[in-house]
Amino acid sequence: MEKYTEVRWHGRAQQGIVTAAKLLGETALTEGKYVQAFPEFGPERMGAPVRSYNRLSDEPIRVHCSVTSPNVVIIVDITLIAVLEADPALPSTTSGTDGDAVFLVNTQHSAERLRGELGVGDSVKVYTLDASQISLDTIGRQMPNTPMLGALAKATGLVNIDGLIDNFRDNYSKKYDEKVIAGNIEAMKRGYAEVKGE
Image (cartoon, rainbow, N blue to C red):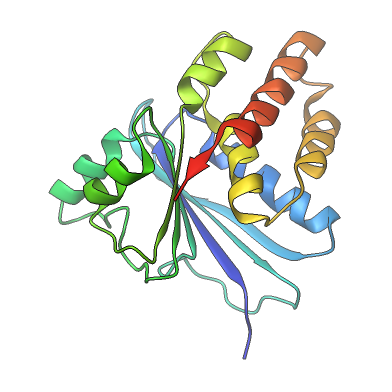
């Protein structure tokens, strides 16, 4: 039976979750894993809810569908917890998770408070990070995807933070100037250092 780790990202259009899932996949690939990284969205406007997914494995991945039972859930916009819970047409942030799930949430609130908001049991690991503030400090705008990647590396060990940084630099140094690259790398490092969990 195949064994892989599934990651589901929840964010809004233009928050960079598609890019984050792609960078996670590319980093895992360079670290010797088999990977999938793919978004799920339509013609969304800026601010619309968006999902993106990853699968990572030590063996070839033979399944090709949306992630419905994620091991890791990353919530880049905390307002989506209530928005998705209120809309029966959309899967909630907790749908498909079990008692071994890991949640990583962009928020100023504590992991204990988030556990209550999510309605998850004590066996579920909940990590929090103020990725919005970190991105404002390091990049100069709210782009919480890179701090969340750093936090993901620390909270789960799925990829190495140095691998994320190297892949980010390799993939984006021709597209962005050095100030933007340096700011995003600092955001990843701070995400890694500042994530808190229980």
